[in-house]
Amino acid sequence: ILSMPRRHQMLVMIAAVSSATNAASISGQSYDALVLGSGLTESILAASLAAQGKRVLQLDGAGKAGGESASLSLKELYQRLLGDDAAPESKLGNADEYAVDLTPKLLLASGAELQLFVESGLWAHMDFRRLHRSFIYRRRADGEPDIHRIVSSAEDVLKTRMLPPIDKARALQLFVWLDQFNEDDAATYTAGRINKRRLPLQKMNAQSFFKYWELSPPTAELIAQGLGRFPGSYKSLRRFPAAQLVRQMKAYKDAFRTFPHMTSPYVYPAGGLGSALQQATGKVLEAHGGASRLNEPPHEILFDEGGRACGVVTAEGKIRADCVIASPSYAGSYVQENYQVVRLYAVLGHAPNKCKDAKSCALVLPGAHIARKHPIYLFSSGSTHSVISWPCWS
Image (cartoon, rainbow, N blue to C red; front, side):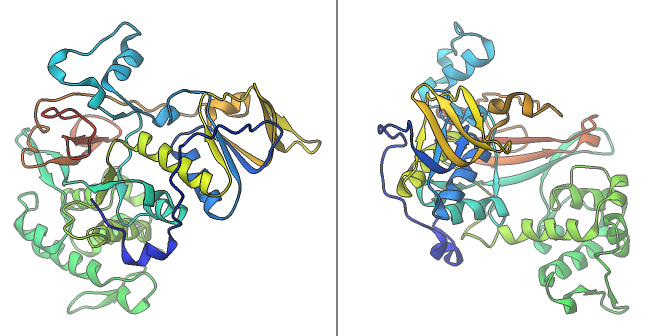
């Protein structure tokens, strides 16, 4: 269980402990903001506004908190994917002990998203726990699959089997430079031991950045996809800014220093993100005079004479607000579909293959190594995060 970083402690606003639902009537009332939906984005926005002193009402017509980001029991997941009559096998354990996130989301411990959880007060009501390991998948030259820990430190460079000997010394220089680099300090842009050069990060692309360190394309791609969380190939690094890549690599490395005993840069809430987030959001809203209501579908969005959204109509009546924030599912014809995301769910009797020492893990499968255009991101956990019945893995 993680305690809050000292630098964030003063940012948290402790909400009074109360139910996530508010039995008081909401009809005829006026709010500073009205949020439709209880997914990840909507809940963070609602809590952030409340933390700034706004009176916020969050509505969702679903009976299950979280919307498309809900945490489901195994039975609920089966019914959602296979039909109302579907039931999980008894060998999978107690179905009610599962909390499968429809939209699993790992949080980088030094990232802006986790900062939002802290500043909004959500952190105080959620039990975030460390993720044990972070891996990357590679297909070796002989065609065999292989999985390695993501290289994130000079020690990792020396120990890993992924890098050829000639690249290890060069990668080591890069990692030493990264450790001292500070984007706001011009003196730290200088690199090189003998032929020192100030790197023009704002003008160069990511591929040129790796060429400066004389790293081979496979090694550069490995570091970019793992440490830099870059989704593309080495070739596509030509279209990616070096400054952004360095920023992402620094954030990954800095995450290990956010909490004691970090063995990966990620954290994840016990009980699933969807369930824990909605409960926390309800507490934050109520502490600031607002409320979070489920089974309360908005029938219509109201607009003023200027065309601005100003409220909704529910079964209880009209509710007014200075602004309305709606998830796509409530925006109707005001939004259009641009892409689709495919999510696969699996129940395992063991840790993912070649991740045997991990109690929980994140695994990056780069597209080029699995014959796909885009990468696959896998999150798996046993009972560490209270999302599955022991001894299974999700």
